[in-house]
Amino acid sequence: MTAATHSGASLDPTRKAFYHGLLRQMVQLRRFEERAGEAYAQGRIGGFCHLYIGQEAVATGAISALRDDDYLFASYREHAHALVRGTPARAVMAELFGKATGCSGGKGGSMHLFDAPRHFLGGHAIVGSHIPIAAGAGFAIKSRGTDQVAVCFFGEAAVNIGAFHETLNMAALWELPAIFICENNRYGMGTALERAAAVYDIAHRACSYDMASETADGMDVLAMYEVTARAVERARERKLPTLIEARTYRYMGHSMADPIHGHYRTKEELEEQKARDPIEHLTGLLREGELLTDAERDALRQSVEEEIADAVQFADESPDPEPGALYTDVYAD
Image (cartoon, rainbow, N blue to C red):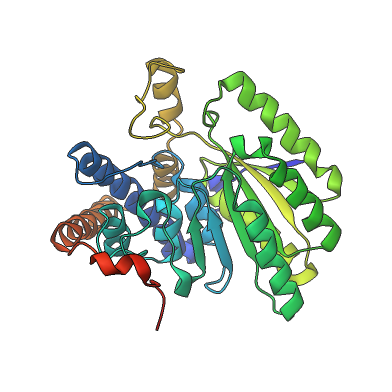
């Protein structure tokens, strides 16, 4: 398994707009999740709510390497993945609020975001349950003879699920155009750091299935883009699967019901990890390369602030689903 990192010395000035797009995307994800956390604390979001703060580089970098017609699957910490795929912030926030204007018609909530027209197929609350579904999409792609790719995001705790190993085995044997991205945020549900490390040893050994595998710095958006681009080329051109371990860190607790620190990590550990913040990392690289001015940074942040404020207002003012919507298909004509 090789490690993927990125050096700021290799920034291409002709790709300034691309870099700015990555930075704006991560800022959008951060601000969206911050406002979602506030709304949850105020009782405007019901059920569970799992925030992605700290992991923005993984979804942003990886999904930016895909085409719009590639299939995308995620676990229950998926607000960011839907936003990067292109689901409007209004539709995602409204879904969190349980409103009829949400991307799942208010029926799914935080853990079940779907956007079928954009090939974003969940939002899956059962740990590891979507991994074989993603392989099914890869099988369909291969059967149809198209050059699409199926990409599946999941947390490190999912590699304890039998379906993970069964799926990787099938994907390798059948040579499916699938990419499995394990977001190792170090604290899978119900795990301590030591157990998480043991789980990852299992993940690495799973590549005895003769599947390509790479480890990437999940706090570096450019590294995530590059490692995913290589996996996409492998899947699109040669119909071969890849397992990517993205080593990242979430700043929040497992869910909004969980404290930020205190049960299983210290405040000092959290602050140490924040020194590797993906947004600040890319900002620093761009400033060093003279590709980002203070005015550009401020304008970017103001644009995001206005977009997310609009999304919250839209969600607040949207209607609740009608009772009869329980029996209708959100994507029916």
